[in-house]
Length: 149
Image (cartoon, rainbow, N blue to C red; front, side, top):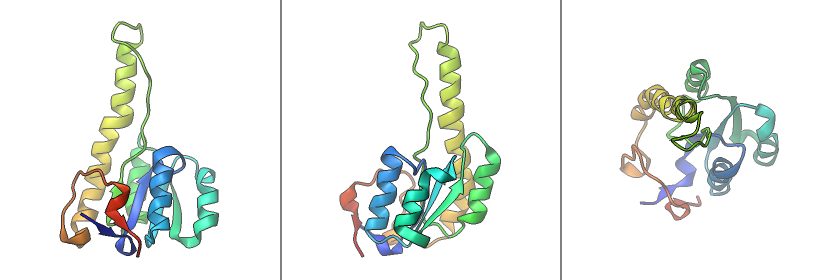
């Protein structure tokens, strides 16, 4: 499957570094219409906004704060692609004193917020014309799947 980048308006969580930043830059370089960069610290995407101008729209976003998810839906109601990239990590082995605490932290920071994000943006995405006339509810895209406009 190949997506035409010129049809994409995306929301990328954790867009300020690592994989999220690479996805953001890749979409924008390929010609995406707009990317909402959903991050905890708006200043962390200042350089992206300066480089790409109005095609980058920073949104304060913290998966552990339900109100920021709801605000993102209000601000980014025109998206047709949501990439859930943000997450937390606290490593422990099963026998560590903090094993249960670490597991709980990761569930509360990675799993439950992902469900909330899907519930919040599901109706938005369902109301849009599917990209490339297909539905991709959960799929990992390779860089080769996005074509320049």
